[in-house]
Image 1: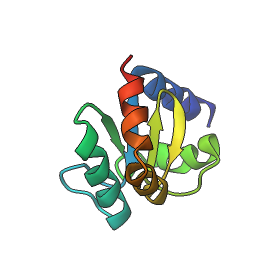
Image 2: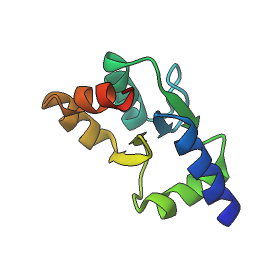
Image 3: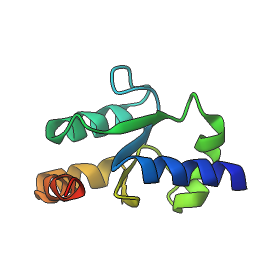
Amino acid sequence: MKDVFKKIKQQLKDNNIIIYIKGSPEHPSCGFSAKAVQVLSLYTADFFYVDVLQHPDIRSALPKYSNWPTFPQLWINQRLIGGCDIILELSNNGELLRLIQNCHK
């Protein structure tokens, strides 16, 4: 588990915006991942993704690391933003755009 946590920490450090999803942005494997990527893509194309279906080690470790049980998980500047419902809420109130704009400063 320690090695997987190390891998997750490195991914978060290397990418200002990272989303852990089921599938890929082009071919999401669940409706929540599809919606989250769709909303995120309205604001930026500059994000990294990890398909947790292709990385079972991350799929099992990330909920323990983040203390967040479900996918997708959006992280900005090494901080967990949340899942699909939170991404939608932040998009609707303008906060997601602000978080994305601030992450590149």
